[in-house]
Amino acid sequence: MKRVNLIILISFLATVLPQTQPVFAENNLVQQLNQFLSEDPYLHGAIAGVSIRNATNGEVIYDHFGDVRLRPASNMKLLTAAAALSVLGEDYKFKTEVLIEGSVEKNILLGNLYLKGKGDPTLLKEDFDRMAAELKKLGIKKINGNLVGDDTWYDDIRYSLDLPWSDEQTYYGAQISALTASPTNDYDSGSVMIEVKPGNRQGDKAKLTTTPITDFVKIINQTVTVAKDGKKKLTYEREHAKNTITITGTLPVTSKGQKEWIGVWEPTRYALALFKQSLKENGIEVSGKIKKGTTPIDAKIVYTHSSIKLSELLVPFMKLSNNGHAETLVKEMGKVVTGEGSWEKGLEVMEAELAKFGINTETLVLRDGSGISHVNLVPATQLSQLLVAVQQQPWFPAFLHSLPVAGMSEKMVGGTLRSRMKTQNVKGKVFAKTGTISTVSTISGYVNTKSGQTLIFSIMLNNLMDEAKGKKIEDKLISIIASY
Image (cartoon, rainbow, N blue to C red):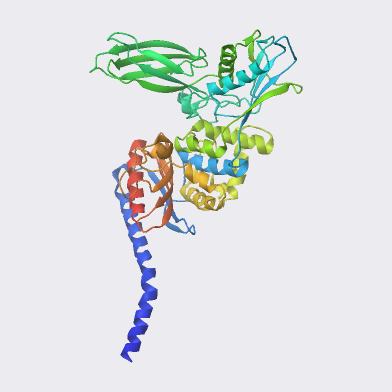
């Protein structure tokens, strides 16, 4: 009889113990997170919204002000990326068209040459070179007309509604146009890269180069090369509504130099200037003016350039947190679905798409696609819900691949997390989108935990005195989650 009772007891414990272990671990996780959030001095007076879910079933296993609407900063890009993949598809490509009006006689185009942009944020100087080479193949040596840039694919509103005026000259606040150009394959569209290197001797001005090489911007060099123990301090200022950039400051003679990206004024004309330069380099003269306009219906397409796929664009977009890509995707969604490439229509499309992922759009305030606005409001629990839902989508591998990976030093792998979370328990195990604007720090994504599970988390810190302190808080919270 005793043996039977022992067997029954063992059987009972076998069914109970496996269930109690996760409960204990979960209780321990909740306790650790609560203690940290209540005791960290930098969170006093701030608001922390935290939502943690089981990636397998979406169950909420931790919530701290998860339903409170908070400023998401660049965590907004998670919403934009998911909506864009859903609306446009991971194989979507942007087009740029070269068209001619009139006839070609004796190597002369008797009419205008048109460059029609359709939103491509990845156009480089080499792409304009390719377009010019195609015209050269047609035997064209002179344009006896104007070079016209057509950016009417989108509206003419260049800045999102709440962009701070102080961000106007920055690459992350660059103007949005359907016809634009990027300096490098980071694809910071609408900007120029300036490299500053020390002069040969103390007292010399620094050496300046731009990428791409262009006279579209005028640089006033007020720099000084100083002794090797001198200060490295440079400031850049682009004059409002112009492309005059003044660089002041000092650079030690032994310094490696500095690179800075500056948003240009009027990216359509920037693209046209680069195209005209490419035409000249290919022996094609433009006799008329460089201007903006609308392509006539009867203009003939002679070359179409296609961008990389959206799945590929997602990597610099998300890894490097590219604001221009986010706003372009919003306008593109609006154009494709409603026929109007504007923030207003794009955000309407985005909101409708997010509802399909179980997002309560009634609790969101969406003002842009990048998160640069301080008016955007999103609860942490809605971000964690999105990250659960997108796992079921056929494009999820592309979405996951685009997220920065903790502690991985390669730029296009680690992205904005390449210098963070390098300890063994989290390095290479956290895939998450970061976010930073003044007084705000956020991070949301996936973490592979010690127990072999995948957890989804959204951490949103608002009203911080110093947003840089938020990164250390986030890293500690994620480390606690990873130990689950």
